Image 1 (cartoon, rainbow, N blue to C red):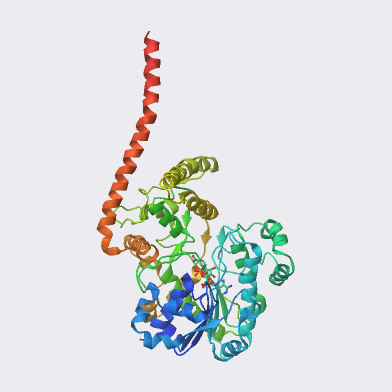
Image 2: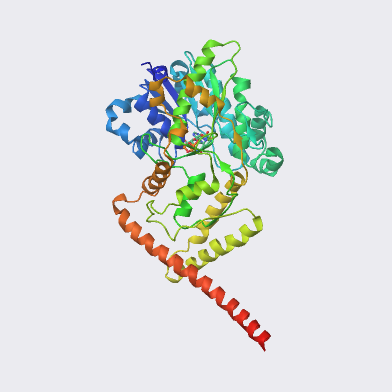
Length: 500
Ligand SMILES: NC(=O)c1ccc[n+]([C@@H]2O[C@H](COP(=O)([O-])OP(=O)(O)OC[C@H]3O[C@@H](n4cnc5c(N)ncnc54)[C@H](OP(=O)(O)O)[C@@H]3O)[C@@H](O)[C@H]2O)c1
């Protein structure tokens, strides 16, 4: 049986930006484990006092690379760190490394980005727009080049309610925007941010939308393509079930609510949200590089860079926010040791009710706990935890109060074009998921990989959680009782007055 996708990667050299991030780690792992590549080159910046080489070493310590660690002598020599920074001119690469890229690299996954939705515009432009321009300039001189995949997001043009698999006109000329970010002070740029980003809800999606268009203007005649995942969540099975280390999106909400901290969010529970599993998203990305290379080879002169949306449309994962939360709130899933209270999460649409309930369910308990902490000579921390959590959930609420129709026709076509063996190796058929198992693994994975809790003590954690549940219901019914008594007294007084 032939394996076209695997053969496509055999003995190739792959360059990756964002290899230390959530998606990037999964790409590195899958390429090493399945694709028999010759080498993987990661553009890595120094961070927190660690040089790129040291960061690479700690990458191998991550649970997602456990299978790779078992065969470390086979794989370690294949992976290399190139010191660079997407926010620097010419990516901050040395002349030697630029030369190496031009001579050696066959396939590029441009995955690195500045994802902070609450960021200043200047930072987002420099990393997401200029960083993309710089990498496209770099690959122009590359010999034996097979594919460049730019990872964007399904929400880059989220002012539209129907997201098609096509390029949308840029809100502003990318190069003009870069010049503005270089020439205007960050303060001036901040003061005109709202006018500039207009109908986009934040700087992250705005800069992603601008960067997409660079593929058309700077690399139209090259084998390039645009891949737009929806919201990426835990893995289904590869290389381990339930892995994630990303708390930006729904997983952040799930985790903080499962810990009994987040109790209310502004969301319309009936609207559908597009989440996709991490491993399936990576499989689709790897197949997309192969697919676009095929298209480019057959029609180089008339080649139009393809756009692929990887969304949950027409799959069993297209769940409403309410259904998603119900799937996760199963009592047979393992509770967290770090849970501070019994889990409950209200979805509220009205801004007014949200503000009131947020005060009652977050602010009041936070002040109570902080007062107790201060009285026992410990540091108050709940208020600051709530400030952070509420900031994130307020940013996300735009995506929980709206619904999008994200076309994914080309994903289906690509699936149909894969042979049996490739389908097995690179499964991205979301309908093949067992939803119950997926959500159970998601919660277990959060406990294991994000909170790093001792899984052998799950029974003790369950008993502790039962006590929290008992406390929760005792408090709840006592409060209900306390509020019912005055009402009962008033009614009986009125009735007895009437009788008299
Ligand atoms: N996660 C999702 O749900 C999702 C959904 C749709 C699209 N996407 C897209 O998928 C891509 C990867 O996202 P992710 O979730 O993996 O994000 P992530 O975990 O935050 O990773 C971002 C990566 O970009 C790197 N990076 C950021 N600024 C850099 C700079 N100045 N120089 C060099 N590297 C830099 C980071 O490196 P450091 O380790 O040095 O910080 C990290 O490796 C992004 O393009 C994003 O837009 C993600």
